Amino acid sequence: MHLVTLGEILIDMFPSEIGLPLAEVTAFRPKPGGAPANVAVAAHRLGANTAFIGKVGDDIFGRKLINVLATEGVETRGMRFDNEARTTMAIIAMPDEHTAEFVFYRNPGADLRLRMDELDVDLLQNTRAVHIGSLSLVDEPSRSATFSAVKTAKEAGALVSFDVNYRPSLWRSPDDALTQIRAMMPYVDLVKVNEVELALLQGGVTNNHDAFDAILARGPTLVVLTLGKDGSMAQSAEFSVTVPAFPVQTVDSTGCGDAFIGALLVQLTDSAEWQIHLTPERIQKALTFANAVGALTALTQGAIPAMPALAQVEHFLSQQTRYQETT
Image (cartoon, rainbow, N blue to C red):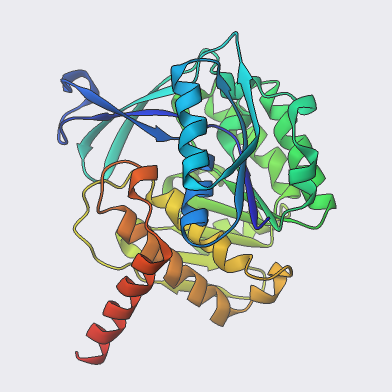
């Protein structure tokens, strides 16, 4: 297995109109989502063998989500049903195509009820990488299950990837979020953040390189920052790389970060020794590929429905190369 992701899978209720705040949206369309599940689909569409570990309600949405992943080719044997809690739902508004507002129906959702004894240990011990997000750290028992999964995978030699993916409304307080996110840092190899999350982690520090150094000091090997229309950058203890974005006409930026990290992990797990990619040249190539995948995802509404296939990405990159050669 190239990649196992763990955490929330849910129903995203996308707005029928873009340009309205949540209270003014007149209708919503259900689409499959959840950041770790999105990453598993993104990576599989790009050629990786992937699996998802998580929990859904024993309801129509939960069964639909498992079917979606199975249809996409993602291994689902690590998924569990909960007959007491519903599948989590996220209600989304988009005041503009680059901004999303979220209200989560999760009190708790089934995803937060995943227990340590429900983890598929075989999957965790036989994968090149494990990817998690912070939403499974919000409460027990999923918090302990997530820490256990990460430690199991790490001991087996897997790359551990962590998307901070901060959603303020799901935490008791920013301090609570910071405590749990920082507690996870010593166990992970790669941390992915956006600019808001980077500032949150470092108390408003605006110098990216200083903020990166502070995160690296907590244990990770690589910090990756997504910058939207300005591209992405990565920093390790030895180097820093910045790669510009590919300009596209954005329809919906939801899921672009998940597509990006899925693509990056595909690049880092094309061999059993992910550390060989820790050079400026290889990371630049990986970020370029991931930027392209994120750009293509922005062209369609929805997260999982928008994820591109490898052939689409290769064609897109070849067109960009031809354009650069003629200008």
